[in-house]
Image (cartoon, rainbow, N blue to C red):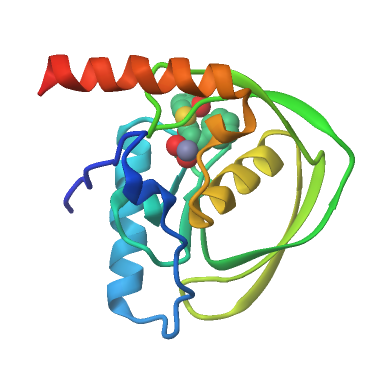
Length: 167
Ligand code: K1U
Ligand code: ZN
């Protein structure tokens, strides 16, 4: 199965709002499989289709320590959130940058699984953070947008410089 190239901030395609999946077929299941392989190889604990330049509402997450609890969420929707937590985040699209972001402490997310069955997940801690981070990607939002404008400018300048060196 192919590893998918991951878009890097500030690529404007990361700002695209993803479209709902109308029909869950083998092409969507294949996309989810390739995304999962790409996430494990990176390595990461989540990946949104937006990051691999596919603008459909699909995310994969494995925030388990044993790396054997893969979640595939299609058309995920945040239906409840409460509390506040501040957690250090990273992003495969913003390599080498980590910073603290304020998120809801507990969330409930409704979604479809790869068989098209409606599911609901309640999460707290890192899994809740990761769900919010990945749903943000589907809305065209990268975690650095939760930081100050000064930090965003510094991060952008650093990554643009890096991309010129590696191009
Ligand atoms: O969306 C992404 O780019 C994936 C991102 C998810 C995430 C990380 C931390 C907090 C919130 C969301 C990553 O996985 S970055 C890499 C990372 O944090 C990690 C990698 C391997 C093991 C554990 C963590
Ligand atoms: Zn990310």
